[in-house]
Every structure is written in structure tokens, then in C-alpha cells.
Amino acid sequence: MKKFVLATTAAALVLSGCAGGMTDTQRNTGIGAGIGALGGAAIGSATGGNRGAIGTGAVVGAAAGALGGYLWSQRMENQKRQMEAATQGTGVAVTQTANNELKLAIPSDVSFDVGRSNIKSNFAPVLDQFANGLRNNPNAEVRIIGHTDSTGSDAINNPLSVDRAASTRDYLVARGVSAAAFRIEGRGSHEPVADNNSDAGRAQNRRVEIYVGERAQRG
Image 1 (tube, rainbow, N blue to C red):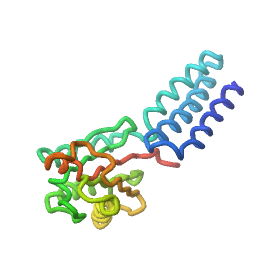
Image 2 (image 1 turned 45 degrees about the vertical axis):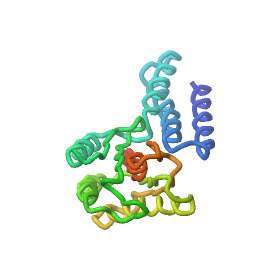
Image 3 (image 1 turned 30 degrees about the vertical axis):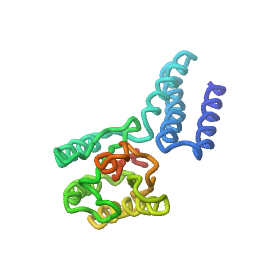
């Protein structure tokens, strides 16, 4: 049992040490798996005590932890349903990620005009509804990622994508969501979801993506 726990702890430390080269999803998934394995091993030891129970507990725990570093609570499910209803027919995609985050992918016809970072009027009702859910979830962590189409150079697109994320954050903060909940990023034109050779494709690429994860409440 001691050897297994030490090995699992070492693996978790390696995952944490390598986190700098991982995406957010990979980092949370890896750390979740390590923590889950430790928890599963402890449960196996407490309930069975033999090597088989300990090993099974670790495997189950790792699998549960690998589902994501976030919880998918009833509160998150309710917010997903509310956002699906609020965005119906708008083109906004509302999904649950493999890492148990609520994701909103908001295209340009809802969010931003070409070369602009101002919140469009038809984006405001979506964000208003979203703010309601965030205010009721003190454990939420929010990432907002701005994107552009390929029009213009990186010198223009990279700061513009950050400005779009910042505008979205500032709008939500102005409606009572804690500023501490947010992290913003800009990816410029480097992560297109459609062909930049057409107007329709560029419109899809000119977007923001919002991710919300709920951490377990620390007691």
C-alpha cells in the first residue's frame, strides 16, 4: 500500500511539474486523475484492505478524476439549460466539455463586428442571462478566449482578440460577477474553426469562447 501511494503521489507531482507544457484541459485532467487515484486507493484500503481492493479503488478514482478537474453539479446543469433556452436561435453553441466545463461559443453575428471589440446589442441579452448564473455560483472559474479572422496582421489581431475577451469580462463584472473569477486570453487568428477564404468562414472565426468550471468548495 505504501509503495502504491508513493508511486501515485510521484505521478501526481510529475503531472504538476509538466503542467507548463500542457493545455488547461490536459493539466486539469492529469491532476484530477492523480488526485482521483490517491482518493480511490484510500477508499480501497478502508473498505477492502487487500491489494485488489486498493488497486481497483485507484483505477476507479483515477478514471473519475480524469473526467475533469471540475465538478458538473446540478447548478452547472441548470445554468447550461438556462443558457440553451436564452440562446436558442442565436447561433451560440452551448455545450459541456470533456473537462466538465460549460462552454459558450459565440460567433460574430452575435458578438463583434470586423475590427471591433465593442459588445454588440444582440450579445448583451446573452451576457445578461449568463451573469445571472455566475452570480449564483461563487465557486465558478471563468476563462474567456477571444479570436479573430485572418484579416490583418498578428500585430492587429492578437491585441484585438484580447480586447474582445476583456470587453466580455468587463461587461459581466459590471453586472455583478466577481472580477476574481475571470481569466482572459487572446488567440488572434491562430485557431480558426472555419475557412478564412469566405465571408461566412471569417464571421465564424471572429468570436469569443467562454468556459465556466466549478471547483469543489473548500471547507
